[in-house]
Structures are given as structure tokens and as C-alpha cells.
Picture 1 (cartoon, rainbow, N blue to C red):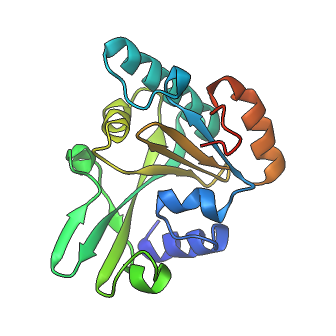
Picture 2 (cartoon, helix red, strand yellow):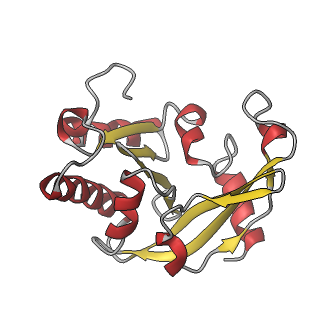
Length: 195
């Protein structure tokens, strides 16, 4: 897949949002649900036992949604604020993957109340095979708030976006979301908002 093909796929499949994961739940609230990575909505792992719980939950969910040994896109990006450029990978864990950059997004034009002129975001994607445990170093850095990246399954029509606290999921429709949300009931937030 080249950059043009990715952009065509993205805008045809997810026209309500750009590939910036924290916007997904707002763009597709009827297709969204969130799991928490640790019991009692604990945000960060404090020891290796908790890291094992967190990684087991995330690997189980991602394998269920993407499929083991299944093709997936790994997506991240790079911000440019005036003359300063920085990636979403402070820890450098994504450097082992080969990414294809797409066109820059003018954040001030897309989100005028959140960004100023001269602020841009450039998504980057990498074609991968999802395999349980293979991405543990990446999942740890995301859970620690050091990196931002998400997975896309074209075959299963879903976005899976880990963050520091859990995983946001966008599925193909509301019925599919409801089915998965029921399946993962024990890992959901007790709040009515699902956050």
C-alpha cells in the first residue's frame, strides 16, 4: 500500500475523522467502546504483575479483533508546530518499523478551536502482521504514555487504539460494537459514559 492508497482507504472508510486516535470516540460514538487495561480502572501498571495483566488483556483483545497472524496497519504520526517537529514516539520504540508518510494535515483548518495556524500533523503507516506478544514493547510504551500508535484491520473493519489507561475500539457498526462490548463487560468502565 502506498500513501495515496492509504489516504483513499481512510477517507472512504472513516470519513468523519482523520487518523488521529483521540478523535475516534467523538467521530464514531455509536461504534466505539473502551476497555480498561487494569482492574478497578487503574491507569498505570505499578509492578510486573500489573504489567502482565495489562499486556495479557491488550493482547487478548487485539488478537480477537485483528486475528492472529492477520494483516494490520500500524499507524502513528508526526507533529509540526511552526519550525518544531516531533513524533509521537518519545521512547523510540517505533524506530524498528518501516513507515510510509502520508500528506500533512492542517490542524488549524481541521480543528480551529484546538490548534493554531502553522500546526500540522503527518500520519505514517506500516503494514504489519499482528501476532500476540510481538508488539509488547510498543504496548508498554503506549501504556506508559511515551508513544502513540494504533492498529487498523481492513479485513475486520476496525480501529484499535491503545492509550495510557486502556484501549479504544471502533467497530464496523453499532450491532457489532454492542456484541463486543457485552463480551468484554468485565473490562469496561463502570461509568455511564464508558470512559
